[in-house]
Amino acid sequence: MPKKPPHTTSLRQTAQSVPATGILHMPGGFPILGHAGQLRTHPLEFVRSLREYGDIVAFRLGPRTAYAVNHPDLIRQMLVTDAKSFTKGRMFDKGRLVARNGLFTSEGDFHLHQRRTIQPLLGRAHIRQYTATMCQITQAHVGTWRDGHEIRMDRELFDLALATATRVLFSTQLGKGRSETVRRCLPILLEGLGKRAVAPIDFLDKLPTVMNYRFSKALSLMHSVIEEIIAEYRVRDTGTADLLAALLAARDEDTGEGMSDEQVYDEVITMLIAGTETTAGALSWACNLLSRHPHIQARLQDELDECLGDRDVAFEDLGKLHFLQQVIAETLRLHPSTWMLTRSPVTDIELGGHVLPAGSTILFSIYALQRDPSLFPDPDSFDPDRWAPDRAEQLNRDAYIPFGAGVRGCAGEQFARTEMGVILSVMLRQYTLSPASGPPARPIVRLIAMPSAMPLIVHRRPHGRGVREVW
Ligand code: HEM
Image (cartoon, rainbow, N blue to C red; front, top):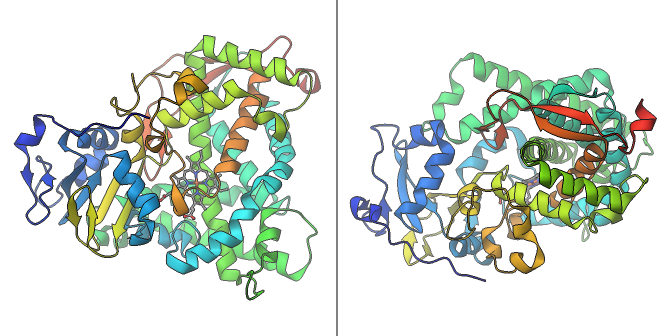
């Protein structure tokens, strides 16, 4: 496993260091905003440029000094070995506006307790049960596509990911009106959270702007819908084997106590926020990359045809579809939905030979790490074979963290991997994707990195599985 070498670039000579820490300060910030403008207008270029200044570099977010950590060993220290010494930081303080005290945003012992209770509900046994539902929803959705038509793949996949998340959470209890409310409100909340996370000054969220009004309205509508559903589940046994029923039935191992309605609400909205756009974005990029690499798409279709024959894809198949797994791994390397994360040390902490002050904001970018040329040769190219066993073992595994790592790593990783595998399998057995004319999709970076409009043309495969049932 190769080690990442220390930085020796000449840019380091042009930067000043931050007194007391000895860490270099990135030049080029603006008065008042510091580097927040660059982080907002050119976020991906900005986070990639940070590594030129060393393994840790300081920059200004408005009036505050923040630190970017660019080395996989130091990121591992924050996420795994010294995880207890960090809270999740500024980005998640804003997340609490929506997800309150859910798994994504809670801290300390309370988080550990909730994680122990909820993780089994997202484990293999439950996910296996959800696979058939994922398959049915996808069959029904892609069955409406017409041969040779151009579709907005980003929208289709958001709808599909949302339909899957809501069906797995609430079975059929949502209904059309409430489903539409969730579909409208969720993107507004995600966009609002993204803007707040990188805003240089906190009071901007409190100004009476149209954006802030839409955000509050969406939050209150989502609250009403989810509260209503929880109340319905409480008064009558729905007899459903869905995630909400499992959350309501979950008991603390030691005390036997269940969660309050407020806590169940926090966990439900957390799953929707953490699990919908992330998966939809990753799937959209996978489709985009496959449409632009026809030989890779054809190889994947051959694997699917050969392994599945005339059957629907089942949970057990996913582990055997090795090339599918390589395509998913490579997509998540190039386009990790959670492109940037924050942490904050609870006490002064030693990191990479420097002492970072308690309470400071530390940022690290999964996107920049996974495109670092010293860690991934030819980092911008789509090469699923870099995950073939003989080549994958040469890679530094600490540099590949699309689902994070340690106790705060993604609780829905298995869910997301299964959903991506099922949707791609069902779709690519029926259709071949090709790019539509017009500019290629580019990342729109908010809290997570989503693709811009992504029109693709879907061509029905002559012997594609499922075509007979649809037409
Ligand atoms: C491709 C899709 C996904 C990606 C790339 C992704 C990525 C991540 C990452 C990087 C983290 C760690 C954040 C941190 O360390 O600060 C995380 C946490 C989390 N994710 Fe995911 N996620 C995905 C899908 C999902 C799904 C489908 C769910 C729910 C069903 C989910 C639920 C969560 C939760 C609850 C946490 C917080 C875990 C904790 O702090 O204990 N995610 N995710």
